[in-house]
Image 1: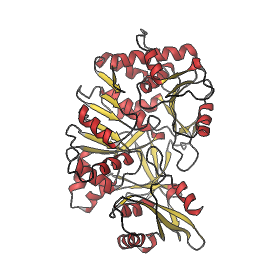
Image 2: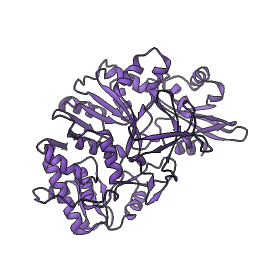
Image 3: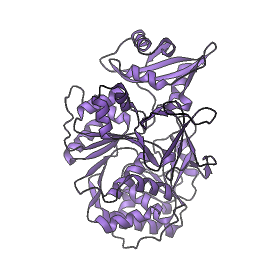
Image 4: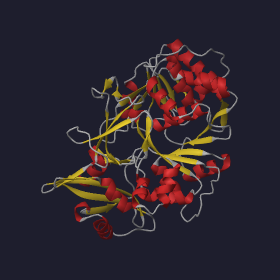
Length: 493
């Protein structure tokens, strides 16, 4: 199946429902489909090879994505916050593309092949066109540039069949009723932005877009619009928790589900959030750009069971990403590529219909179709997957592999610590030595020596950072991922 069929289904199934609200304007599903078909017709008439999107969370986003899908050309949402040089290089990699931009057109943009978001959306209004012809499910549908936290960004290729496999395996068509409203504030150039759009449209849920995240605005939107579910990245939830400091309850009775993902969620932040949102079901969605979004879920029942249990093994599940979705296979392998038994820590390899494992036409799947996630993790005997960080993040001190996540969680549980990162720095004797950077709250925190003593007591001396520095903030991507290489560069510069 190809993505264009989704619009055919929603147009026939619930066209009169409100599909989207952005910037105060709303559109129903019938008009969303018809305007997307009009976008496809324009792209086909112009003969564009791709559609580049440089806007924010706007009505032009789904129109551009579905318009490109109907025209059989890839949709390429770019991070408009990138530096001019890096952004220009990504645009130049797609010559002849139609460019939908936020405020200012990129340098050298062809007026016939570019449009501002609002103008683009309005230009499609009132068009009477038929659905475009079916497209080959094997065509590239979305090109997403990875965050580049450990290397230069690469364009991951998601074909129609990958995205449709994700939808068909995780979402029931028309499963939402008209009262369900989803608040989307994740960036449009992230896999979470693509997946949120597709899953909400397929379910028939109304989407409310926030083009900028602010914790007070986010909470007010949930309350005023009676939002029933939302998706956030960990840094967003941390800001909401901080904003609610001193409150006993978030006062969001309509919010039935709150999903999070895109980066590691600090357990202390999650526990406090579950206290503030006592009637909300939390969902941890783990996936990668290359896997067409989610491949494992920790659902509401597992969250509450882990939150309240006295059993250490059950409580530990709050730090897991849950169980694999149907159709996803996983192997935990050692450095030699041999599968490991349950409970053993190793490199995660994934296989399934929704997994692309392809960059700009170059597949990185092995001969048996397995994709190396570059994540380190383990899966327990009950099938819960625990992610222990990226393979590149592992610190090797005196021959011992040390996962920084474990140390960071101890630091984050300390009084007054709001953010923390642990990295390995070059050391002539041990190969690498541990260093930590901590962000303290306004009311202050423990001293560096006191924090080191807590780590030594909770873990052991070999996992205790030799130095701890205090910074006002840590370098992160727009989706909350730590830029560890920048931390290392600053500490060693």
